[in-house]
Figure 1 (cartoon, helix red, strand yellow):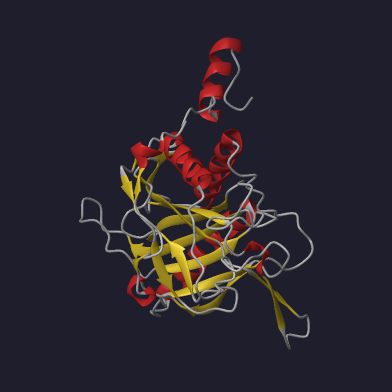
Figure 2: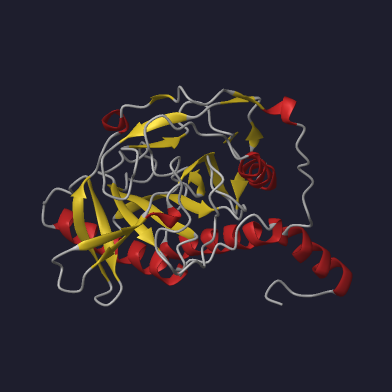
Length: 310
């Protein structure tokens, strides 16, 4: 292959807490009635103050420990500013400079960081495309985001990483990670670079494209494979790759352009003034882990003589 793919993943996971990230509204992914699990805080009413959900913080630290990440001593929340109909406050409370977890490794892929934020509401579009409705039940649900280093080189490797992460989340019992329900959403960052000649310098990275909100492992693998083919065809004809966000059309089995990609400075991050910094050692969390999938596989192979595929 003439071109070298460079792929990193951003994976959003809804955490299995009883209440939302910054208020006492119920966190119930099975609620069918729209706009019942809401309150003035998660609806962004003036004068309301958020309170940090400690269980969500503990769950995020447990995930960090499971992937051998460095747990923060000091962490804080930031405001990420953008305007969209499903974002009640006009900003999202997230983490930027001081995430809860840095580093770690899973399936041979290095982890950059794991941070905690709040989910948005859900848009429901009319079939005739003349209108949209907003359900705010999901707004404010604890959302953990795991970001990998660009260590992945194929659709199959991306799928296997996401599958192993889902297993860990379920073993820890911190999320059901049901992709069909949107409890685990994968985003792919992918670029292609011309391979240097043998013994040459490292290939200069190409233009990055993001594929948003993939909701099945099959979609993760197929979207990566399609995008490698699409970008290869463009480069072969001398065309430029556009730095953009793309979606995945499951029916057509192809990606499609959505919008030009934002940069970090577009969000105008600043420290969340309504929330205190976190000093993790003072929280006295129980971060005891159960036997993880990799450990169980190793034990079963040694104890019962099972093969890897078994």
